[in-house]
Length: 207
Image (cartoon, rainbow, N blue to C red; front, side):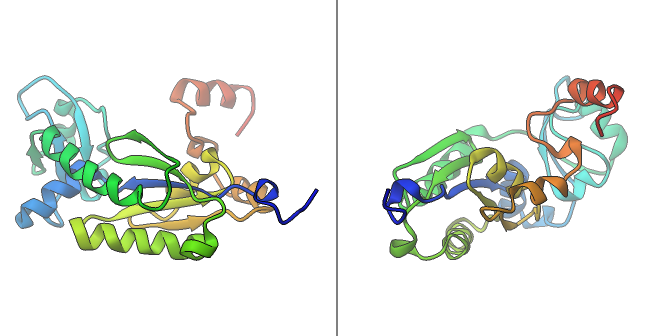
């Protein structure tokens, strides 16, 4: 086999994740919210949950899917704003269209996340790190939003890598360093591992 053929080269998979997307849009659109704990979702006094929150709000232990009553208890001085889904979708479409110019092999998995297969594009666009920095700059220049990028030989590792340096992160897991990368993570960091499964593994002595 010709080892230089594209089929023999490792995959280069990007996972892109717009940082605290809904909250970041609200902070961008309303400068008075910058640097403040922003909670997007139901309003206090109403039934509902947190859709997302800014990194400032996360310092209070607030997270997505938390009952809004609990979020208010933890941060009564937070800035609670309603979801503007149509607005977020419009922004997402523009960003995804930009990313899609790099590869036809893009799979959007939510309004703020996507996988891109950049395998074999180094001669065209440069190294994966160069491409990621260019993407991030284009998103910032066009929308004034930050994006974290994980790069790895497969989707699972790319997803984990995008969480390493959030927000506005860029992390690559090189071929051959997959095991050492995973060794540096907590069990709870693994994507798809829920609280019940984690508790079960802990009971089995798996930490």
